[in-house]
Image (cartoon, rainbow, N blue to C red; front, side):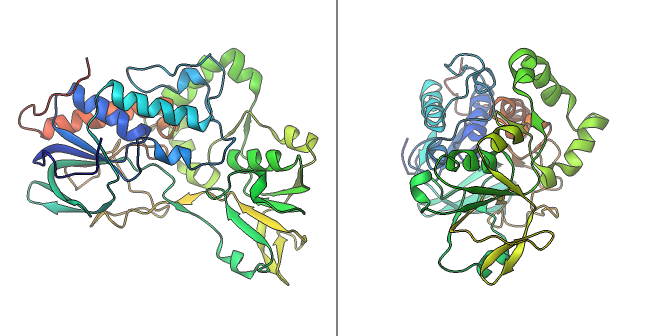
Amino acid sequence: MNAEPTRDSGPFDAVVIGAGQAGLATGYHLAREKLRFQILEEGPRPGAAWRSRWDSLRLFTPAQHDGLPGLAFPAARNTYPGKDEFADYLERYAARFELPVRTGVRVDGVSPAGAGFTVDTAQGSVWTRSVVVATGSNPLPRVPAASAGLDPAIRQLHSSQYRGPGDVPAGDVLVVGAGTSGAEIALELSAGHRVLLAGRPTPHVPDPLLRYAGGAYWQLIHSVLTLRTPPGRRVAASFHQRGAPLIRISPKDLARAGVVSVPRFFGTRDGQPVFDGGDTAAVRSVIWATGYRPDFGWVHGLRVGPSGWPDTDRGAVPGRPGLYFVGLPFQYALTSGLVGGVGRDAAHVAALVAQRSPAPGKVGAVQ
């Protein structure tokens, strides 16, 4: 793995952008299709983005659903791997299947070029018949514009900047965003702070359901809640507004730890946060667990929907032959954005890439 995208340069059957779980799963299937491809990764190693998350982060799905195609995750069932464990697994995965990952390569632009695309980087450009964007669902932190009205003495961190309780000074803390990330950060901070959690929690999946009926639950979210079924389409329609359900942690857990639930963050008054209904609170720190916003401006000519995500047909961009995505939220099913669900989408996209390739190229090492 190195930083030279022009080594053995094009034409490629595909260039995959991103060496997280989506990009590596796509590479696995492209290799099985015997295609000639590269995976370009901005970080210094595959899965580098996982290592930058907060120290105590664990995956939201149990180990039996945390493996990529061809290699199960090496942990006991119903355990939740830490983020560094998973990053290590991604590195082993890339090495095990000898995937052609080029690290330290930032992609600056993707442009149509003849029957394919030019992928521009600081180290050079490559031509490819197809491009697979697998950059993940967390490109840019989303922070409300009203945050600018908070007193400058209040320490503000987005969840992507938070590493642990040592980042937060003494005093009351407001965590904005009651999804799984916000809930877990609030619970961690409650051991040493008075914590307020703003927002309406997403529905909680009970632990006994995952432990004793986890297989049936996975079947529901993986095979029933898809874009092919009426229930799946209903869930998909509101997915970007509500987000994924709470797993491992419940509102009752938060209440037992002393976390105070407050209404949605509304704005500021006199430098302090204000909530729906007009109540305010004096806090020393604010953690914005408010998610991320997509950024695909570097894919020239790409149309995106109101949510900022591109509209695709199971990863294929209508009207843009050869342009594909893997790892989008609800790309095909509720599990599309989860580690255990991305492999199916990757296989589908790799098959579409193969259809555009006139003949097998570079043979991968996958058996």
